[in-house]
Image (cartoon, rainbow, N blue to C red; front, side, top):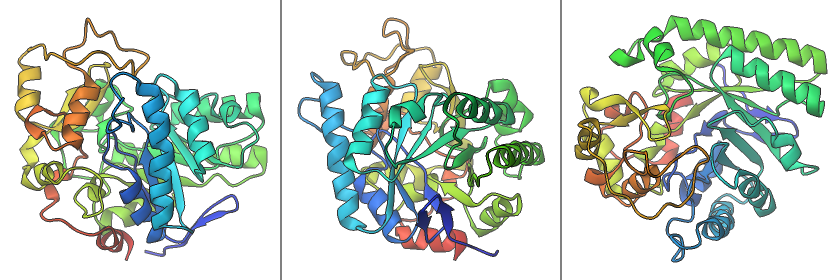
Length: 360
């Protein structure tokens, strides 16, 4: 495997590894800073990032805005020269304000998914921050490339491709997951999705020629070891994105009990679930998810108005509550998002060990 630094515009990451954003409270300043210190791109998740602020329940937006600055400063202290960014979900309420807060804090890059970030260039304005949409299909890639090109006369600085073995919310329909064999939890590399990646890269090349620029690409989802990383690079991408592997690190911001849930998990425990917002996701089966699947309506705290498409009167549980329980280590009452290979974690590692195992 021939590894090169990841060059995005005038920014260079010595190691072509992006640590995927994980919310709530899983990838914050400590993890992002540690990854950036080792030469990768450390990514802070802005999803309900202020959940530990004392006024989070009553003043959610302001708590989140304060925490964006705090977590960035924490990461930057650890990695003064590293590349540090934020992952921001389009589906979040106050998305534009959170993007601007991340830019004001000093973010090098904004990675954005959970919906296509159609107007991210407008929000970023004249700032020098790098912009990286997350897509999963050729169709979504062409939509964002065409729109940004026509509306803003620019291309993404980086395109992040998330495949069907990723953790958390997935950018696929249930039918697409069946096509890729994900409902059956297969371990094999999916040739059908490899072909999709090839088509995505073909679309990228078209727009590179049209705009006379280089659009680096990163592939994530189920990259757990050196062999899978090598396969990703063989498809033609410039970097890999890994998230699940970084959960069971000493530097990860989540509670130790959350990390232990990964270490205890068996292959059969990793399942596709439906989140309250209607999207499929991947998580560890636990007492909480068994209650949900049995049809129980889980009581929740007063609404934090975190997502655009969420009706508190209709949801089976509050995703903010469930993810905060996870970050705090209250794992029996939590939604434990994870990637397809979470069950392969056997011990706590350091960030350096994880990066070395992927590309060392």
